[in-house]
Length: 290
Ligand code: C2E
Ligand code: MG
Ligand code: MG
Ligand code: MG
Image (cartoon, rainbow, N blue to C red; front, side):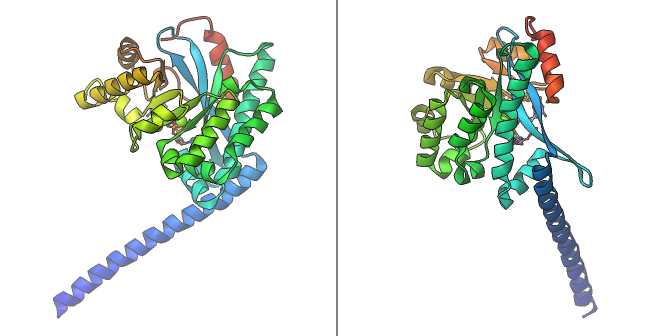
C-alpha cells in the first residue's frame, strides 16, 4: 500500500512537472505572439544580410536576408522560434510582406549609396504557410515596383514542403515569379522528401544544400556522397547549387573543387546589419574573397 502511494506521489509529481513545462511553454508562446504583433506594427524587426560567395571567382553575388528580432522584454528571440509562432498565429503574412519590402528597399538604399545599381541580389525566405495564405506573387510585384528594383535581383527561397503541400498552387506561384524575372531557390535541399520530378518540371534555378550535409562532409563520408549526388543531379538538370554552412576554408576549397557554384557560411561572414553588409561588399567587390 505504502509503495503504491509512493508510486502515485512520484507519478503525480511528474505530472506536476509536465504541467508546469507545458504551461511555461504556452506562456512563452503567447508572449512571443503578442510582442511579435507589436514589433511588426512598430517596425521592431530588422533583416540581417549574409553574403553569398561565387566559389569559383570569390565574388560576392548577393546576400540572404534573415529576420532578426531583439525585443525589450524577451531579448534576442531566434528566428526558428518566432517564425514558428508567426506561422501558427497567422503573423507570417505581415512578417513575410515586411521582409520582401524591406529586402527590396535595402537594395535600393545600397544602390543610392553607391550611385549605381550594385551587381548583387538579395534572397528572401518564404514560409510554406505564407505561400498558402498570401498572394506572394503580387506581394513581390508590389515590393519591386515600390523600390524600383529589377526582379532578377530578388531571389525567392522556398522549401520542398511548400511544393508538396499544394503542387498546383506552387506551380502557378513559381511561374508568376519567373514572369517577374525572379530567380527561385530550393532551400534546405536534401532534408525534405524531394520529389525529383517536380525539380525537373518546375521553374527552379538554384538548389541550396542544407548545412547538415555540408558542415560535416569532410569527416563524414556519407555526407560527402550526398553532396556529390546533389551536385551531379543539379548538373544534369541544369540547376545552380549553393552550399550552406561553410565554416572553414577547407570546406570552401573542397566545394570549389567539386564545382559548386556558390557558398554561404561563417567562413565568409555571419549575417550582418544592412550598413555593415554594404561596407563589406564595397571593401571586397573587386577582390577575391575565397
Ligand atoms: P535558412 O533559410 O536555411 O537560413 C540559413 C541559416 O543558417 C541562418 O540561420 C544562418 O544564420 C545560418 N547559417 C549561415 N551560415 C552558417 C554557418 O556557417 N554555420 C551555422 N551554424 N549556421 C549558419 P537563422 O538566421 O537563425 O535563420 C534560421 C531560419 O529561420 C532560416 O533558415 C529560415 O528558415 C528562417 N528565417 C529567417 N528569416 C526568415 C524570414 O524572413 N522569413 C521566413 N519565412 N523564414 C525566415
Ligand atoms: Mg534560406
Ligand atoms: Mg537555407
Ligand atoms: Mg538550412
